[in-house]
Image (cartoon, rainbow, N blue to C red; front, side, top):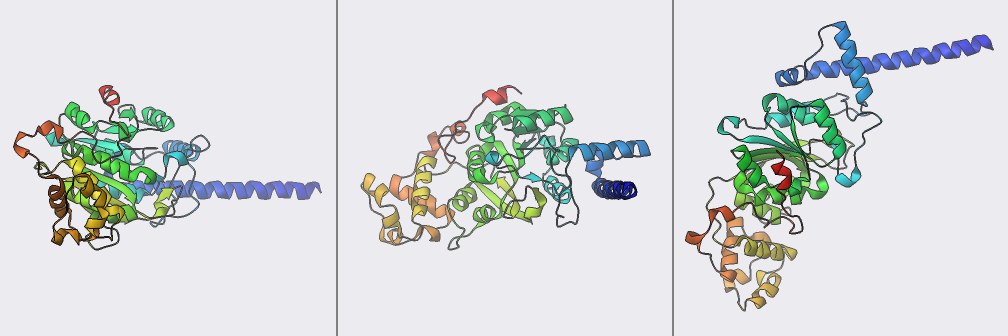
Length: 374
């Protein structure tokens, strides 16, 4: 019995040793793969000696949990700090864990720092993108709502400027003024507030040069959709009036932890600049667009019946029989003008054309106090 017991102990210790060797081998391959990108080498220097190798190995084993499923690139990437940090469902946290996509996303940021433009990362979480970005953009700013992540980022990257705030409460116009140039925004957007964040960026369109953000694949399709297609809607019209949206590439759900049920996409949104003021009141335009798409397949004379009655107007016959899903984005400007008239462009205050809530949820107000702390 004693011999059997000792043999059992030997088998258990042997299995444990083999498992540790497997984890060590996987971690080492992951580090070596990351080292192929020169910017990652600059941000996270690779070990050269055995002692340094063991130190890195220990750090990774203590701070990360290996994913149980391989990503499309065949890696088992590190995901979350072990034991102390778990994603909050209430915040829609899905952390990017595939290093190949980390590199692809960070490469999409166009270096415009020479013109005074600042990189702003929305929701950095554990810093998967931050670590690479910081090497190229040391003056970047991160906006994070989760206090746990803020503390983690401050500890790992002392030189990083971190704003502990909701991305919906940031005054991007004031932030751009403080930084002395327009903003280049990057981030992995939570699915449940993606549209609100996009509309918040649109409200500050004059302060933002470009946004490269990941979002649910279906939302990305709406941004670039054309009339007479199923995805075409409010997002399509608004962002094609204010910007040039483009889907750069699709991202599988296996690139995130925890894995969402849907795929994502990286979308580049190039805000038009300089951009002439809209010929109609943006708030009236918003009302017309939103009301129209509540009954997207009905004729405008029916879907806009309430608005037309409130202003005691009727649409011309050639407009009354059209449907919202048929109209191109510029045609919504004409439709709004038919109902409310054009505004006096010559006497507009340019300062009032951006930086005020129009498209986002009116209940979310812009806050400048967090920005002032910079």
